[in-house]
Length: 196
Image (spheres, rainbow, N blue to C red):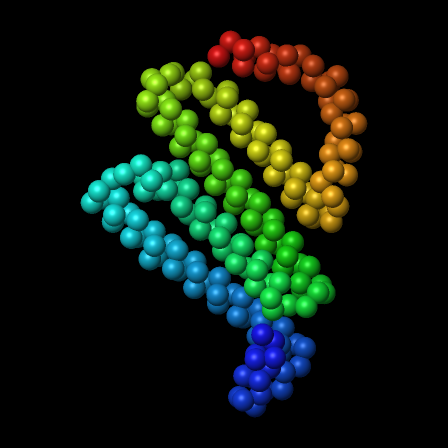
């Protein structure tokens, strides 16, 4: 791919030095991400909204209600940037920076998409079963907390360039101390879960 880009630049009389190639590649990645953003948010999202206004169904309303489609679209953009980085850029400082930023982007918007999906599932359960929402609130918060902690561990492992297992082993010793300090709070939380 870089060979074709270098030939393309030479056709326009531009010498493909490292700096010129890096700038051209960053422009290509940025333009592709922008095109995908416009395609997903301006064209596909509007089409889904129009389709949902004409004929409501569970899938389109689920995509629109909790910002699920917007978060999935941003997640997809992060995947595209990550994929393009592996194709265009050789390993080095720029490569590592773009990979780290795109992976953090993927994890954060993946977590937000999971949060939207959890909210939609519990709202649907609330409508179908007529269960009081405050009874399900602690379950929703617990599930979100578990996913949030998992995402936080992965993001920290990416930023520190360590294995998540190494971070978990360090957290194991810290959690023993936290259990002693917050024993009453944890017992109160557990009792609240059992009551609901």
